Length: 316
Image (tube, rainbow, N blue to C red; front, side):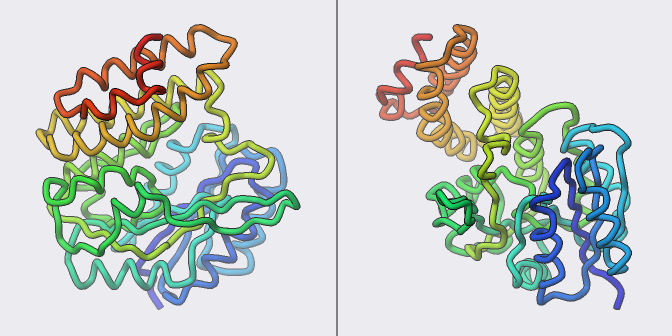
């Protein structure tokens, strides 16, 4: 059977988690897939795990970066090898649900759209270290529920809140026609790319089905668990700022408004809680500059600006 979908699976030092990710691919009800496993300069057992998977199953192939180059570069390396009609992404510490590819390919076959985005949930550990999935978060639900086929970002502006790469399946010809590529050498690289996808697509689909469990690592090494670091905050704010600028430049005011609302209601308050007790004044200064930029955006809602945490951030 010729593959129809290629899944790009990047990983750096993910030996404790990669077996679950690879098993979730093998468990797909849609059989016509192949996967490019990109080992991004790992120093643990990731290389051996990827090699063993490829030796046991010809649907897997492995590419190795001799030194770590970052998630954006690893994904770009994988995409360069795609020769199937559809492509998607799965981080090597996450889990793809069994019917994910069946649901996503069937949706694109029915609609003819450029890509489809599904829902996702966090996979978090309890005190004993056992992982279990949580509920669909409100911003994910707003972006994906109810199902919508063949829409634009102007028709469904809340979709702009789904900024992750791994909940989407994309037509390869659209990816290349739209000249899509992940930014390299930075974190939160999928946020900018997601807004480019929404702006450049002729039509896209959303479905409420949960397609991925997004792991929040118990030992705290997920990047979203390190937002108290100045370098992580800088990349986070840059990605959000640039993603919003893409929507503004492409003249999608409804989507830009939806994005501003979400940033003010979710991201700024989350980061302000960290900033309030942070030892570095530079952390507060960076967040304050970002919060004031959002407050001055034409689509900013005055009600969101009255939040105590947002008000505090604007003063830093």
